[in-house]
Amino acid sequence: MQKNPQDKKLPEIRLIKRQELWTLTAQGWVLFLSTFTASMFFVIAHLYPFLAVTSPIKAADILVVDGWISDYALEQAADEFKRGSYRQLITLGVTVDNGYYLAEYKNFAEIGAATLKKLGVAKEKIIAIPTPNVVKNRTNASVVALLQWITESNLSIDSINLFTTDAHARRSWLIYQKILSPKIKVGVISAEPPYYDPKKWWNSSEGVRIIISETIAYIYALFVN
Image 1 (cartoon, rainbow, N blue to C red):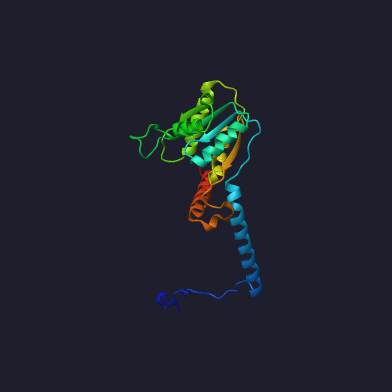
Image 2: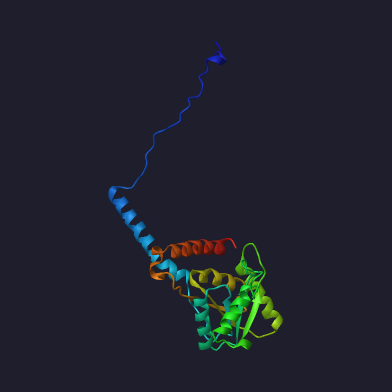
């Protein structure tokens, strides 16, 4: 006798099932949380020194200065130039985005250059290179403008030191090396900020803002840019 197709049972639907699951014991959780906490403290304590790197090249040919940095950093840049054996000091910077129509200087390269002259750097030693305004990757645009000037100047430049500020140094150094190395060796010098304690940056809203933003920007430059 043939079975009626309607007599067939519908497949059983099961939404959950029982299975064994490995999990941490109380001692395991204690060890995990202790290790995680210690790792976080280590990262926090060493994050600023990593980002605000200083690794200059001895007897570099050129000192390249970010023109947008604050006066305290420009003071340190002037001192660095006077101490070193640099042939030239180059400032880089985009067009000012506030007070353009009132300002005597229209870009940060010129502002930085004028400030350094006031700080005692010889006028004939300073070269201001304005960089194009771009929506993103401003540092890349600055390095490209610098490379174009070096190429057109026909100067024999084997090495430069980049002078910038604070936690911005690591990211800028990475981008400069990507574009200029190995033809031109790149060192970096970071000016230490006076408005928060770098050793305890987490105690300052300014320090937290700078460190977090520069960490994200560095990761972006490392893996995306």
